[in-house]
Length: 62
View 1 (cartoon, one colour):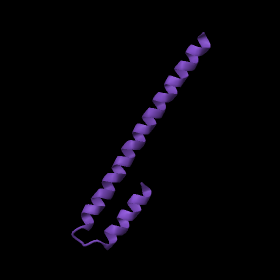
View 2 (cartoon, one colour):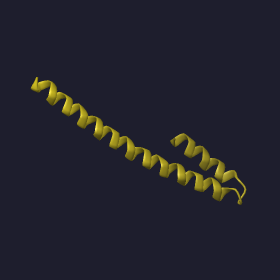
View 3 (tube, helix red, strand yellow):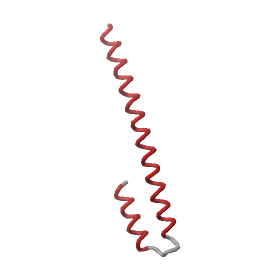
View 4 (cartoon, one colour):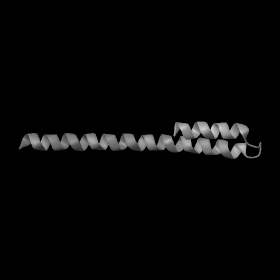
């Protein structure tokens, strides 16, 4: 994603003044979506760790 954002920034610099704000808003939106995705990945990782611990406990109890 970083490459995409960098390329969009380059395009925004060369774009018409009327187009640049749209490109900049797109960059902002992509960064927001990246942040949300990171949060979801952390949630998934926490969930996986919990499930793995529970499975180990059950296996150890047998």
